[in-house]
Image (cartoon, rainbow, N blue to C red; front, side, top):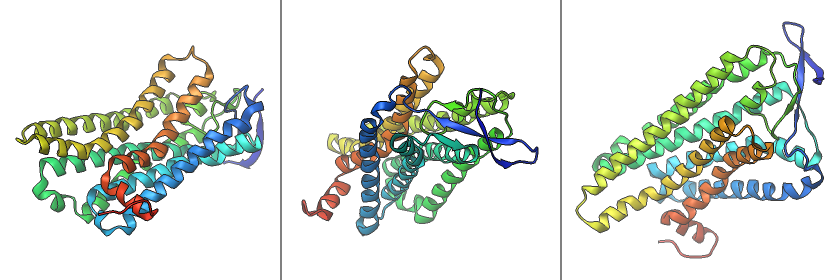
Length: 320
């Protein structure tokens, strides 16, 4: 039987359910060991993104459109990792599995908002690279501080706007099935499968949101790089071609780091129902943790300006 606990009474005088965060089912005896790599991942994500933000903030030479967008990406990665941190560590450290529905809906909102925001920021960064390579003489005019601020605000409002109806719809559903969630955090599809109400509207809406955000963004990023490649091939000098393409390598890497796990999660969710539940859990953890952990590492290694200034800040080298 499902487990319900009265927390608040809504307008229909019904009780709010309590969900159970199951996580790594069957591995409870080694949770203390499992928590070690996750804690390290969160620590690397926090230190890496804060370092990127501080370096860009302090170094006036990095106050350029490309690095402003990188700052927004770092803030997004911090938000994405912090959204899953509380319940992840609560389950692994304290075996605290119960979560009230309202808290679960709030976590779901932030997780999906930051996910779609990451996609939007990556698209904005692709536009930045397109303007820098295809219209270099007008780069600073097109992407001035005001335009960058408006792009950042539009990305945030778009991400919040498409996710907001999701928890509002979930609040009106009845949950009469097993109330155990698959992960150590709350996701839309995971909660939706517990509903005994007609949830077709929410399911279709979720699919439409994914298509119109992640799908459209990925296509636009691909198109931008087709245009960039066409412009680069028109450059006569081989050295200039390599120099132009080199400015895009970091962005291409973070695009792959984000979209490959997302596609993998979608494929596993659609066609991997016969797979072990642990595969689904691991894939979801990868798609939420990989970008915050790897993005600052990629930009620290592949972007010379960032790398030199980080080394200089830590007294390991001299920037120029």
